[in-house]
Image 1 (tube, rainbow, N blue to C red):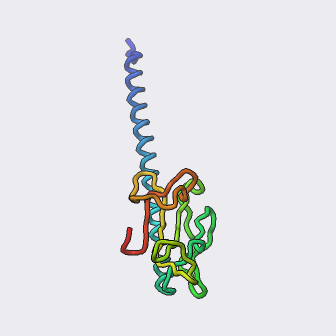
Image 2 (tube, rainbow, N blue to C red):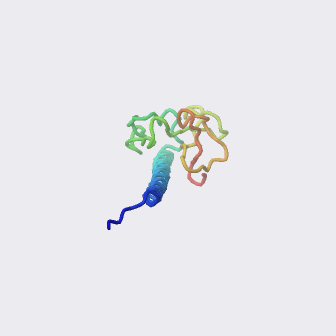
Image 3 (cartoon, rainbow, N blue to C red):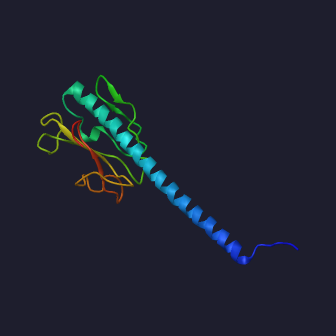
Length: 158
């Protein structure tokens, strides 16, 4: 006599496989988000280090337009004598997300390094998993409909 699986046994096994596959897909999605967020944080720290080297050599930070955060920009941070960062990295989900840089004067206003020196800055990104900014800088400057929620400033500041 042949032993066969019943329909109920097959349905139970199919349900278990489906639940395991669904759980794996959710875990994979979360791991991808965390990985992209880690890259964003690393990229911003790399840009921050270049900004600090620039300030160390020049006495001020570059103006806001000196760092182009447009996707595929592939230009770096330089001055007349040095290259501080050969390429500004793109956000992992560019062009939907992008990095934000805004140079500020000591009063928090705009600066041009001629009449008013850039003594502060905000460097920001949109994280997918969590945030650390208490206030959102630049509105939707981290991409279309994506307000920045991870902020950095000069060393010693978050």
